[in-house]
Amino acid sequence: MITDHLDFSGKVAIVTGGATGIGYATALQLAKLGCRVAICSRSADELLAAADRITAESGSECLAIPTDVKNEEAVIRMVERVMEAFGRIDVLVNNAGGTRMGPLETIPTRGWDAIFDLNAKSAYLCTREAGQHMIASKSGAIVNISSNAGITGVKGGAHYSAAKAALQMFTTVTAAEWGRHGIRVNCVAAGMIASPRAAAAWDAAGLTGDDMAKPIPLGRAGTPDEMANMIVFLASDAASYVTAQTIAVNGGPSLGGMPLD
Image (cartoon, rainbow, N blue to C red; front, side, top):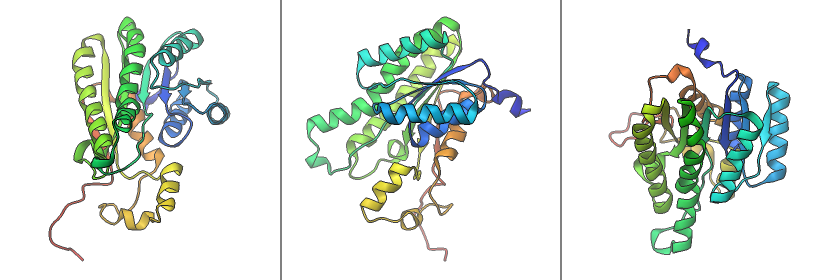
């Protein structure tokens, strides 16, 4: 039974960007499946409140560790804190990410570097540090969170698209190098996901979810829980023979061609 492989009892997970949206939904699902979870983000108050809700709803321990995952020393301290508190790391979800859109000709070098730091460097730092403990225990699952932008690109997001594509290749190479240690590494590429922050950004731009979802075959935006479903599956023993994959959760491809209506 697949449900037998979705038991995370005794396991420990780190979820970056775990206070809101996809990260929060993932941490909550893992906790409800018996996992002890450490969540991190820069906003301490928001993070602590999220950890309290996860513990209350799941009955599993959730540790809040305010961390700037772009900062090497901060990531090292975060992983050390998890090991001190829980003694092991079984799952790492590199969810922290984001962008500010703009045409290529106006993107400053500092802006380019900032997007790569948030979306690619942070995953490298967390993977390197948490991976040391996974290698020592000869097991582990890492799930990196990418975007459709990393697969198809997006105009106005050259830096973001390039960073997410880099994250996908980082996934492939890490899986190839660390498979011998019993570590699986996969990537989930998000399509249009209606997280609270995304929905607020759409509203601020005068966009409606219905209009934006018209090219999507399923005709709607996805939810953070739908992303979390795939992330948790890839982190679980149910995906024990799945590694080095980038899987899109995007409602289907937007294709050209003749109108069907």
